[in-house]
Image (tube, rainbow, N blue to C red):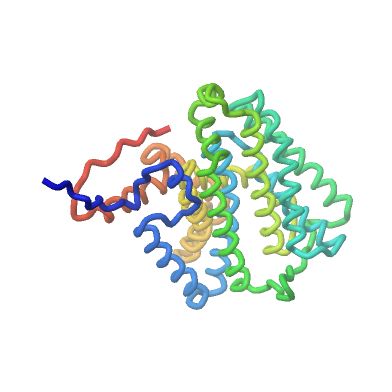
Amino acid sequence: MEKSTKKAPKSPYLKSSYSKDMVLTAFDSPFRKTWVVVGILVLILFPFTASKYIIHIANLIAIASMGALALNLLCGNAGLLSLGHAGFLAAGAFTSAIMSTNFGLPIVVIILTAAFVGAVLGAIAGLPSLRLKGIYLGISTLAVHYIIVYFLSEYQFYGGFGFGITIDDPVIFGFTLSSEREWYVVLCVLVFIVAMFIKNLLRSRPGRAWTAIHNRDIAAEIIGINIGFHKVLAFIVSTSITTVTGCIYAYYTNVASTAEYSFGLTITYLAMIIVGGLGSVLGSLMGAFLITVVPFLLMYIVDFFEIAGVVKDYLFAVQSGIFGLIIIFFLLVEPLGLAEIWRRIRDFFMLWPFKHKPLTVTKR
């Protein structure tokens, strides 16, 4: 009998070699390609159908998504706790304020400067990670946060800027960004660039090294990974993206004020990555969406039902309590976050009408 020379069909979900698994792409399956096309169409049509207020909320979600992606890279992928996220955002915001107000530099140069400032701060904040882990490392980054906020507060006060430094609308290639719809387009592009950069970075050598360090740092050191170098590198990359996010946020709001960058903002970003899913790019986006929308949804409910009294007077405290309940809910019901819920829904429709036993996922 002659052997059949017909090859089995290749699966887009399985890789047959290490080199194919290293290909820098995020659209390697028909399912993902389909949903990417659908997502792009929704993003294009959204600003033509939504009001300015809704577009403003979408812009805040986009900015929060960049910050959540940066923090999740450090905490979720590299396993390094950082409680100084708000301080790094403040550094980026004041970099844009100082450079644009005092020197009148274009936004592109200021963004690059903010990234450099973030890299320097990341290297400084990452040095304690050579000897500290867990909550001790988190406390060291919290100290960096308070140091940054202190110096920026002194600059804001003694510089005579009152409640904040006013920033003019940025100009890109002769085009002024002023309206919500103009910012929407720019922010969508920035979120896409940051998400694709992190997605593909995690599939490179540094990304795999961070995963190894997160899972078993001693085993990673035994197989030859330079743990100290990669820990500091994770801080540098994450903090650079964070300061750029703070820079963009300051430009969007036209003001840089230390009052906005309290420790509570760090807790908000931690809630985003916990609810969305630690170590997940998609989870960062989903968590940023949910946590950013909750305060606006709460205000809408209060106004719609004309709620007065304690709830309306202490809306911020109620909002913080709701954040806490959401975090506890996900930690108890689904520790892997919204990303894991989406994975199950995706697998159901990909394999429908066939039933299968769900894969066992080790929960951290």
